[in-house]
Length: 283
Image (tube, rainbow, N blue to C red; front, side, top):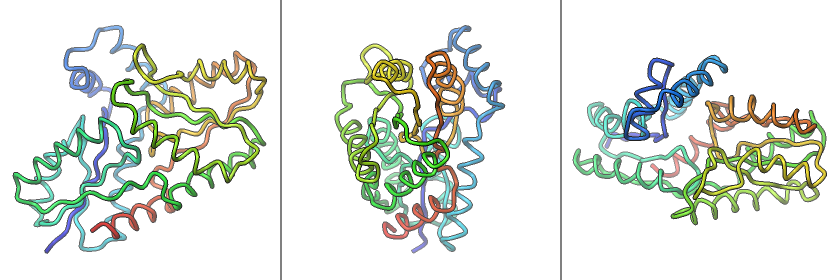
């Protein structure tokens, strides 16, 4: 039976023309003018997001390494939707499908994506399966450990500030447990280095501390050098390229903190090899 892989990602606008529609879909109502302008300015400041280009390289890399397996990407927000991507796989002759979230950590978004994907797969009479969690797989941990060590070689020893997207406190237990798991798995590589975890898009009722709050805490604790590790994000996009590289960098400079950022995994060859091994084992 022909096999297929659905890579599931959050999604986002492909260009500035899609920003308004994306925000409306995300929030369930048209965005306020001020919010729309703020997001547009952020996209313009980074020259547009490379997110979809990175995902295209990931898809092509997996196709190249897993010949004969159909590979597509579907999104919670934006196009193609997970349902549309599954229809595409079915039209290509796939019968057995692996539903592979490009989120290593469990969250309500992953659950929503899988529920939608499973429902559509059942409607299309596809045989589907889900891979085992891989957020503390030794090879995944080493991907990040390698990048952190490279950052420390360039920048020197510093506080490691890990960042991930915030979520509502309600239902956050698994997500926080998984983040704790990856940090605990990384600690043996850096036994004498202090760790701190902070969250993007922090707000009332959501998991904190926020990015700027964590940076101020670091300053009050006497840290003058910080290496930021976007552990919650596999690919660069607005939240790494603007929230970290622009906003947090400015905050660090204002506080007198020297800041360096570790790159995301993106479509790097070692990450592609990791994904291919996980997919091959799960198919």
